[in-house]
Amino acid sequence: MARWNTIARGAAFAAAASLALAACATDSDPEASGSESGSEGSGSTDALKIGTVLPLTGSLAFLGPPEVAGVDLAISEINEAGGVLGNEVSVQHEDSSDTTQANIAPQSASKLISDGVSAIIGAASSSVTLNFIDDVMAAEVVQVSPANTATALSGYNDFFFRTAPPDSVQGNALANLILEDGHKNVGVLVFNDDYGTGLRDVIQSTIEEGGGTITYGTAGQEFDPAATNFSAEVEAIMGTNPEALVLIAFDQTKQIIPELLAAGLDPTTLYMVDGNTADFSEDFDAGALEGAQGTIPGAQASDEFAQRLEEAYGKPLDSLAYGPESYDATILVALAAVHSGGTDGPSIQSSMAAVSGATGGTECSAFAECVELLDAGEEIDYKAVSGVEAFNDANDPSAAYVGVYKYDASNVPVWQSEVFGEVPAS
Image 1 (spheres, rainbow, N blue to C red):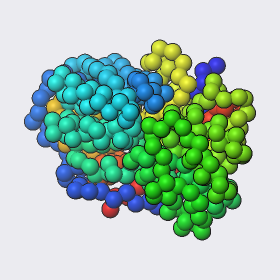
Image 2 (cartoon, one colour):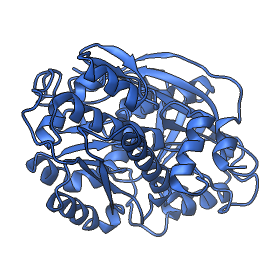
Image 3 (tube, rainbow, N blue to C red):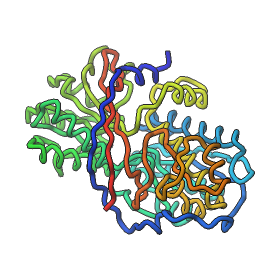
C-alpha cells in the first residue's frame, strides 16, 4: 500500500474551526497585486515556460518529491487540455537545497531567468526564498511558493505569491491544539531561522494569550541550524519541566529527538510543525514517537488526487506535503496567462489574483473547465485542490486549512483533522 494512503485515511473524522488571524502586508494594494483584470493581448504569446526551485537535495529533500510531482501533474493536465494560448507548456526543474548550501538556490534561479522562464515555483523554505527572491522580482518573473509560510513574505513584492498560508495560521492552530490538550507551560526548541522564529513568535503569543507560559525558547534562546550537537539545548529546555514541548526544526530533528527521549520526554507531549512532521519509520525504534502530534498547512488530499500525484512522479510518495499547493501554483500561473492573454511575467502577474477568485467569477476546479469559461468571456474562481482561497492584497491565500497529524506505532504521522483559518490582510 502506498504510504499516502496510510496518512490520508488514518482517522475518520474532521474538525472545522474558524480562526480570525492577521497577516499584515507591506507595500501592497489590490491594484498593484493584480486584483484587476489583465490587459488581454498586451504581452508575449510565446510558449509558456515555468521553472522550479525546489529541494532536490539537502535537509528539506523529503519535501521535493511531492512538490515536483504536483508541478509535473499540473503541466501534464495543462498540455492534455491544449496548453496555454495554443502552445504546450514546458517545465525546468532546478535545485534549491537548503540554507546550509546558500549558493545553490540563487544559482538555480539565475539559470532559470537566463533560460527565459516567466514563472518560478518555489522555494520550499522561506529562508531559501529570501536568498534569491530579489533577483526574481527584478527580472519581473512571477514567483509562487507552495510552502513558504514566513510572515515576512506577506506583501513582499507584487510578483511574489504563495499557495501556503503564513505562519499566523499554523502557529495559531498548533498553539490552540496544545492549549486544548490541557498544557499551559510550554517549552519551544527552535532553530535561529526566519521560518522558525516567526512560527515561534505566533505560538508564543497565542499560548500567552490563552493563559499559558513559554518556559524556554523565547527570543535569544534559539539554536544554531548548523550545529551538530544539541545536548546543551536539550538539557536547558528539559530543566524547565515543560508540560509540552514544541520542536521547530528541519533535518536536525533526527538528532534532537533521541536526546529528548533519553532525557525523559513523554512523546505524547511532543508537538512538531510542517518542517519536521515527517515519516520517521526508518529513523527511530518502533513506538518512539507514538502519540506525538504535528501540523502541516493544507487540506487533506483525496485518494484519487494522491494517486494522480504518484503516477506523475513515477513511484510511491512517502508524503504529500505541499504537493497539492505545488499543483495549484502551477495551474494558477497557466490560468493567469490565459486570462491576461500573455505568457510574460508582467501579464501573468496582472491576472494571478483574478483567476484565484479575488474578483469573483464562476467556480471551476480543473484547468480545462476554467479555460472554457475564460474563452467564453467569464471571470473565474479557481477552487484549489489544497483548499486555499483567493489571494488577498498581500498575495497570500485569504483562507486555508491546517492539517493535524498524530504519530502511530510505526513513527508515521497519521492525519486526524483539519482546521480552517482565515487570513485577512491589514
